[in-house]
Length: 161
Image (cartoon, rainbow, N blue to C red; front, side, top):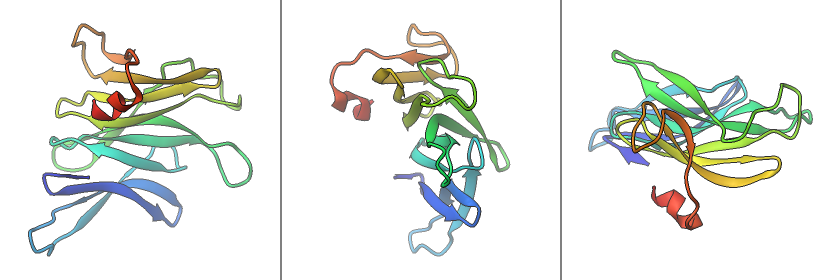
């Protein structure tokens, strides 16, 4: 995905995998910078969308390893800071998160973000089906700030939000 000359994606690092921003692309592609935006843990993350104002959303592993621990993910929103860098926020789940070490765990993934930093995605629980959400940084649209369920109309509507 491209937004104002920036790309989003994932990259493999020596210590794991993380979401990255690729920026500064000129028409001739002369300058490329890569910014590792990290993850909620050291287990990896992937970017799903970027806004025109630089917000990045996706999912970050909160549990999991290659030794048998199951992989589960939480949606995040990364907000750029003036002057460089940024802050990654775990935007949560629609269902309660069990204590550490309890499996299976719920998952969530952010799939879209607008210039105001409002996020859409999905959340599911061990006994709850996939459900769409909107996460708001401040109250708006008749909803409180934070994670809010959206009505389910058709699966394709989530990707169009």
